[in-house]
Amino acid sequence: MRLSLLLLTFVHSSLATLEDPELTFERLYKFGKDAYTAGEWADCVGFMRRALEDWDYYQSETLSCAARCLKKLPELRFDAKADPNHAALARFHHTSQRALCIRRCRRERFSPRRPGIARREIVHDLMERRPYNYLQVCHWKDGEFESAVKAAYTFLVANPTDEQAKVNMDFYMAEAEFTEDMLEDKERADYERMFISGVSAYEDEDWTKCVTHLDTALDEFFKEEELCRLGCRDRVDWEGIGSDDDVDAVINAIHRSSVECQHSCLARLSWVNGHFFGNLVAQVYRYQHLCYFKQMRGQDAARAVANHLLLDASPDIRWNKAHYRTLYPDREEIFRPEMRIVEFARNRLYEQRYLDFTEEKSKLVHGMYPTESKEDYAPLEVVDKESLVKDDFPYAEVGSILSAGLCKTLRQVALQLPTAIEKQAKSEVESAVQRMFPYSKLQGVWCGELRRPACDRAIVLSIEEGNCSEWLGPMHGGCALVACE
Image 1 (tube, rainbow, N blue to C red):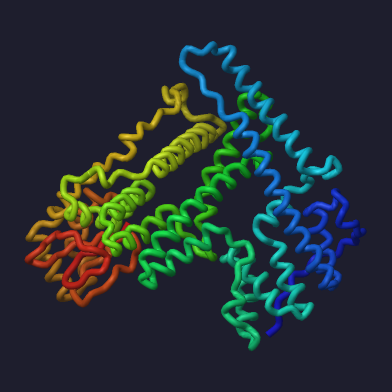
Image 2: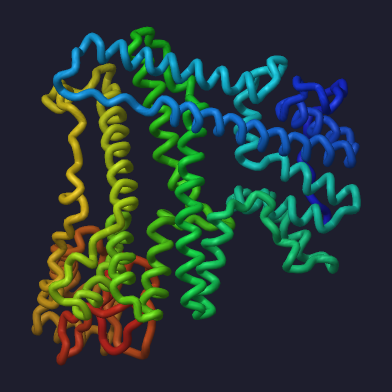
């Protein structure tokens, strides 16, 4: 099998010494691509590795400066009695101070001769790990099979939908030299490593390791998320700012670009080993509450479930809370989420409201902005922590979703022809379930052995005569109705 190669336009380049501060990751990446095109495989490897090293150095120093200056100059806060003229200029003055702090810090960390970023598309390539896509070919051509596999895998993990990357990986894995331990992600972050280890411990039923490693994964995740958010301050979408020269419009466009980037950090960091986990923080608690329970630490399990529900009110996690409520009746205080999760969720809610408002109100329809409303002049509403953590779901009422008569009808359908639910009682059943689970869709009714629903976010209700409408766990047997969100 031949390894497909990407054809690039050859560009002549002049070499510079590695001590030259002007030899940044941009130039090194370009030289690496030139060497790739010329078939100079050793030079390709050398330049791409140096580009990655300088990119890591640039990011580390840039983020360090941002963190340092934010610590020295934290966000200003004014009370309602503050002089509005002073407050407005004080904010701009504060921003100027922070900008000066960052410029001074960067000048100290980088040589004055180091140029600024000239081509943002190269930054995009580095963020997408494109150098590894070149490295895997250059290593292969240079006879370095193991290094080629690691580079190919590192690129594929960050680009799991890239068809050519899949073809390349299949090629390497079909070779006689290939071994599983070559599948190493060279850019794997600490939080990813600990999350994978924690999940593996869960699968191995090592409950103590599961809890401790997932705890560490969370700590490392929040560190990484903070760095991601800091990095967004340096990645303004200038193309999205437009040509409006009003100072407030420009400031709003810049700020929206930054907030949008920061809000997306959770999604970007929820990609682990080429798989998307939706909300990784919630996924940590999905595994951790079970490990706590297996350790007979029921109250810790209850709190982990509360953390998950605040971030993602998945119906199967609601079922777990219902189960813990039977173990700890009248103990609502143990279902209170951790404060850092409350703050995390509240901040994301603020960001989402801000982004929704700016997107909705900036849309032009037939050349016109949306009709003016009171909301256009109302301040961003403060979210009360107590109202945020309050869980109003009517757990006790789930057992009355299905009537005895409806259970009987569904049971007859399940025993005769499960697909007949499409014609019998579907509307009535869906309406009944949606009263408590509004985003659910009926999947079907079945009778049989122990099984698991096809969907992750499942609502499973018994349709047996003796326990009609009992809320069952995902693993269930007997006759049951399954709906999915």
